[in-house]
Length: 262
Image (cartoon, rainbow, N blue to C red; front, side, top):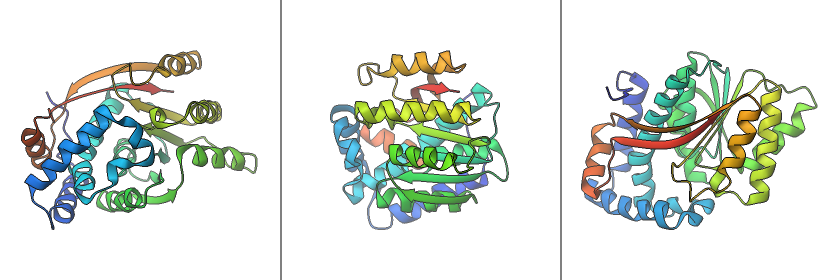
């Protein structure tokens, strides 16, 4: 059976809001053309993602919000359920949050009362994240910063009494966009956060050729008591996401990825 979250009032409200806003001034066909260009960026020119080149036109922003974001939410919701995600955080931090889909999925998995923080460098992404949090009725905030800046800020505050226990830290399709030295520093901070009680969730594309650093992270997570998994699942996207997939020849139903969990 395909994993589905369509029973969620928040999910339905989120999709309706996305359609109302992003299809107000453009047609589905126009968004589909932008999705072709956006998918090419993901597959062929991933270096542009480090400066959020995926968000440089209204069409690409709409395509990301209506196609990739719902699939990300449904995929992460499925993965967390399969992992058993034994730790239900009271606070979720989504580093490189995009539209906030991962934070929303984890907060809903955690249950009522979880607060969320979305961190990204792009103003549009932060606006979109705030809209996502509103749609799901989440107690959420946003911060403009890179993933490494936000992680370093937590590390600096910890010595003044901030604790990681009860916090879930998510990085979805972020680590691969960092420079090697940034990625190494981030890994060190994540491991420190885990030692102080945080749960850490990392997701990246299934393709190994795009992330030669992955095996090193796997070794670090597993040595610390975590786990590494590969996923190929079928999800149940909303009609607009299915329509965009059909229009562009993309498989909106199959979702793949690799995860680290600690």
